Length: 432
Image 1 (tube, rainbow, N blue to C red):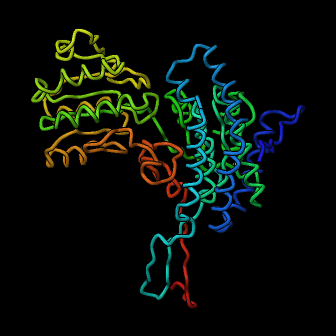
Image 2 (tube, one colour):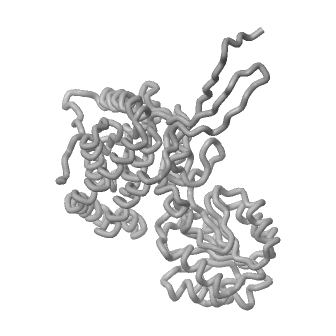
């Protein structure tokens, strides 16, 4: 089916604030209908949306080409351009992710707990949708489909605000999703894209749109996340920087360490699951450090290191204090030699962002300590940090990786997009 624009344009004489409130009201009305939709209805809608995304591929890629050209002309980084760029394969992956979301078990209506009180009351805890979810994201246009699809599956409506870099692509994807919703008999307003690049729209969303938005999910750089935290008047699922570490412990198998470090850093450097710091135990530095550094440099990665790392390879440049706190999202890595597990954990606690951290070790006791003591949303033993992804966790997709501690943590999938209510069943009981 061809690309169809079903998005109502802003009225020419209306203020931005008024139009944003209108988006909120339409989302609230749609959320009530989506919350009551059957699992089968939602799944058919998601399959239909995937079909529409495939059919509209040429139009979406055309809009994406305009976004990419503008980003290049503006001198944006190669990492941002990589996150922004779609091709036929990536677009096919977006449609497939939506389809996979539809194949997941319905999270709505599941019984989380049930118990009987001494007075005979039967109490159930039942999963229900959150309501209206506002998603504010930057350069990755696939978030449009992932967020819209996940929200739909969990019975929610979504208000999506894309960054200026990905605006045209995000609008094309969202409008295609809306066409799929209409074709499935569901309200198009269950997925709305904010049709303006005006940054004031972000402020309007953070205000809650007169109580119409129930939660905000920011997905982007530190500047966006800090603004959301400072201004939001509704709950936030926080996604901060991905300052992720790989710690190569004394007992690490070198071949495994090489494979994991290379994949963690270089598979895709511009994603939040990419490793930004490599820590090497001094006990294995003599055998492991030089091969790891050489491997990274030969793969096209710039290495910034401490004195011991610089001694291992003359191409390493000195690391500054700021490097240990930097999310590069590029082919750059900071490398430090540490004095064992305690020092590695202390470094991660001091400089990490509580996103994803990995240990490479053959020592099970050491791995157990690392997994228990590193306070990150995702901790990994003998595997790449780039598995920090909702799809890889079997969630179909994700809205983001929540690095906070309230309600959602780690990949935010369909279960994290629900809350619960209690159903109390009586037989005439009254309270004395």
